[in-house]
Image (cartoon, rainbow, N blue to C red; front, top):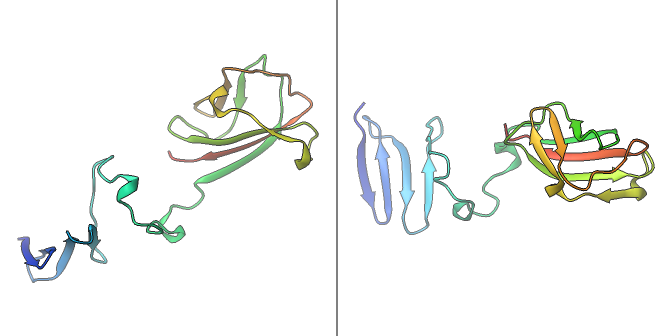
Length: 145
């Protein structure tokens, strides 16, 4: 396939060999358009958050089930490894809370996220360990892997 280009005003278009638009870049609006059925691969880090228009990433465009919630029995953190099945290096811990009375949201206390490191299927308590054996954990993380 031969790719052709065409410029109209501030818009640069990339066309396929029969003249259909594959992709267009609007320099004045700072927007990139990709035709339905086409795809564009950008290296990691090439598109910054600030370059995305407000509300341009909609729920329909996100992969399903990327925000995970885990409620589990607490433990004595003298053993610092807390099993969280599915969490992995590269995921992001959003919230870690301790319910001082099981199933009582009124007793929920947030922990500092910096107290934990993530490894495969495990959150490791690195600071401020406590005996939470009679308590319950409420964990929220982004499944980015």
